Length: 574
Image 1 (cartoon, rainbow, N blue to C red):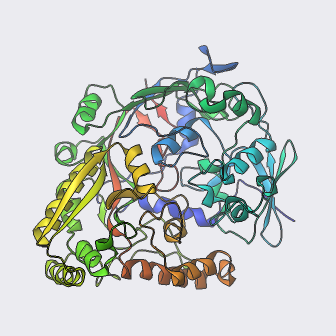
Image 2 (cartoon, rainbow, N blue to C red):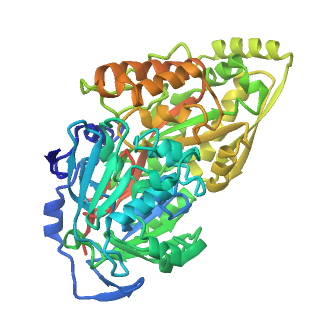
Image 3 (cartoon, helix red, strand yellow):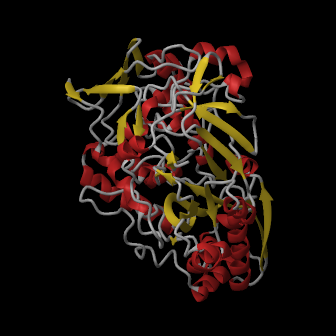
């Protein structure tokens, strides 16, 4: 075994900082968190009680944060959306956490050992406690990870342990062929966690700050029954904040500083005050009146505020795309129809005329500026490599359309597209409808607006024809996108299947290429080409967030990967 301090940042995560620039506007530089903490030390003079036995101490003041959409779930093994991940990470630490540059640094794991063959991690846990006073132990991680792969739980992110994390026996357990107790994770003792992998995984440490891998206290979980993670009383914290006001689908909720957090001295905020505001104009007004410290703006609002020194654009990492249901809709199983649809999209018009937030038109299945290869280059720097299959070309779109209709023996086609109830997606969907109907004669597109949770459920269940959706990278590697289109992956909404594609992904994850960085990179390009040649998705844009942030606030850490916003080192001046 070779001794490795977890405090050393892993190379594969370093690409995360790339998307803080290049989004068409100003950037938010990484904050010197040590200096920020010294500038506004925590005030421990105002204790308050929250949760079961937790002592909470106020810092300087609350940070008031706008959310576009409600939290979907606070169960770390069930949550699937960025909003939920952000809030879960506010009050929970995993083995590792992100620093300001997006690199993996110690959290509950104080250090780790890695075997010479790269397949066994031994994590040594620090002294940390849950908000009910119980210690955080290795058994908490074992219980949580076993939940994640348990077929009875049916976690959408179970593949993070199998296909992505390559934890021993995870795949067989998910398939129902082995018991969850056989998962390659063992509590050697209360402070020692051993994890066995099938093969070396270069980005494994960066997975450890993803919520699916967060610990859960088994006794507390079982005491909550079906109510786990639905209220402050059924939620435990081992992180920087404690949830003290929340109910499912809440439009406002609150977290308070955790006085017993192992790194509490670095937390300056008294708490986090979240407000769900889906109308962007209302959100901007709330910011202007001082009710919000941090809010998103889009469209015409950007024109109003772009010269304000409190305005900035920040890479969010999300790829927005349209998913066609090729399994349930015969017309969308026709490649010419899919090619017509993707060539009829004017992506520049969507980003420049509608969003106006710095989002970048995207013509690749893997978006830009989050994953760097062995030579340090951006995987998707070349946005013209798929110009023949993904570009705005009205004449080419019309030609594909005519061929597709002829092959289907039809002259008209009605398609439904599901879209989130949030402001920006609805605007984008309306433009897509107009572009398609203008360019493709005989096409009618009907928009079905749904709450995000319902839209996601419909797409997961195959109850859709076209779906406007997004995916944010969970870790800094192209596999976070390419892994979605493996046959039967839960996020492969269109139920597309290609044996050659599956074989390439297998080469790169469990085959000879998993330890050949350059060879693996080349084959991942081959996999992406298959996705694009078959128009499995219609990429639209890589999201940047146009933000207003109070000049009183410093130290908010923005990331394009896994956790978009982290507040542990945030300071708000009085």
